[in-house]
Length: 243
Image (tube, rainbow, N blue to C red; front, side, top):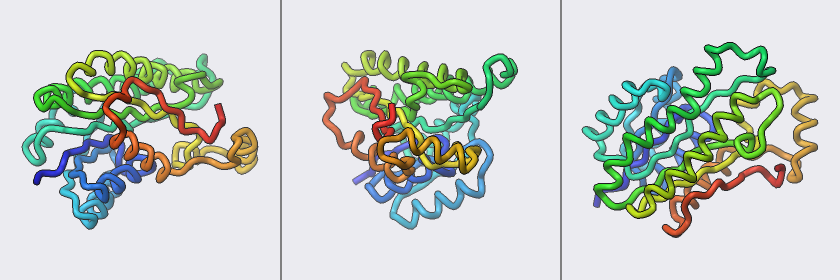
């Protein structure tokens, strides 16, 4: 019996890595990608294969539509069409909007929002043919309420949330579920810029008194994949009661 195929973008570290290993252990074959950290991605591939999954590791910049198209062609040849798409790749920029360059704005929107569009567009035809599929977009609480000094990031994740809700309506007749996880402060490299004092101040704002872990995000991804088909179009916050 063939295993379902899951594509995870941004899988070399953090939430992407944790999700890849959880899916490998949970009976999925995997396609994983990242932009530049190929050595780390290769290690994730080895770990996933040790858990019994077939795993295709690809270097692909999700901000590039041609690179995404090529990635899907390679997945189709090796693993078949994508049954589960997890759009996890993302970048952030910290600072005042007035200090953000046009180039940095365009790059952030291209990775965080356009990359989700490209991968969804490429995955949907195969899902429609099978009359089933699941798309999970990894978003942020800042896409729900906005964050000072992260205006561009907030805008990109707000776009992901709106895209999630709209696409869920389009694809529901084809039995394809589309949901998003709006993460709060997760203990990944994206938050390594915080000084010890800033980190402590942040933790004091979070009712649970700690950051979430990549493993917890991966557990929620698995739960969503196992959830009833009637659950679609939802933005589910994973934030320890913060927002």
